[in-house]
Amino acid sequence: MKLKKMMHISILSGLSLIIYVIESQIPPIVPVAGVKLGLANAVTLYAKVTMGARSALLVLLMKIFLGNLFTGTAVSLFYSLCGGILCFMAEIIMFRLVDDIKQMWAVSITGAIFHNIGQVIAATVLMGTDKIMWYLTVLIPVGIITGTFTGLVATYTLRAMTNKR
Amino acid sequence: MTNKKLIVIFTCVFFAFIILAIILSNIQPDERIAVVTVDGKVYKEVDLSVDDTFVVETSKGTNEVRIKDNAIYVEEASCPDKLCVRHGKLNNKYDSIVCLPNKVVIEYKTAPDIDAVVGR
Ligand SMILES: [Zn+2]
Image (cartoon, rainbow over all chains, first blue to last red; front, side, top):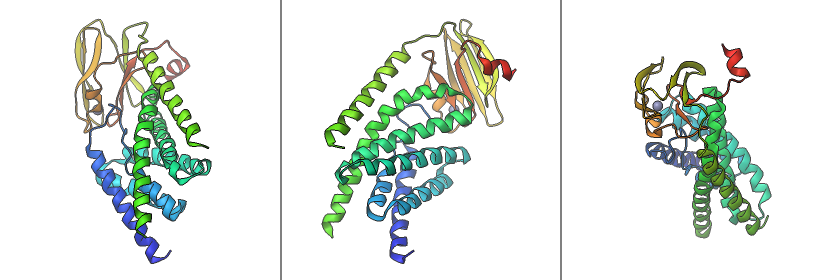
């Protein structure tokens, strides 16, 4: 890996980590564990567009592991991993389905929905009750709203960055 | 996919789930009996017609549960997130009060299924 790319990944990981830590201090909108705005996902999307899927995955994993080292527990690590990986896979598929990079909001929404589905699956596994599934009726609409927001953040950041070059 | 298509898809999904949430949240249980489980195992079954306060003690911490006026809620908890307290009352058949750090779940009792029979 080139030094420049490594630095780029490190900076984005750091940025995503800061957003993640700040976000974990904000009380969740719904009284369901793990429901976050997922703003750090904007950084992952940015990384995917500028450096490709592998680098974006690295940024995501760095955020999850370091973020939980700072603020979480082994349990929250499991949550973040389930949500994060499912979100990432959904986004990679979605990137192929959209025609244009301007449709990143759609990618982001899909990611947010699957992030929440992943967390509910994690909760179901951990708690041994499928009753938590009911929360999806709330978490999917919430994911659509937060996903739109993070998608727009990523789009505008990307536009601002590419215009400067 | 065109923008229009995508917007239609997400709008439909959004409202479909909102409607589903509204419908489900209005369904009340047949019997007002709640089950408290710790780490997937039944800890206590309580009748909500009798006012009561008890403490659920787990290896991870404690949750003080209160039953008042046919409703059940967590009054106090040792967990760091306090989401179980913020949840408030159990308000429909599908609702559950979850304390992830303490692995405590409070939900309405459902008709006995195979799981419950095998589990005992
Ligand atoms: Zn709790």
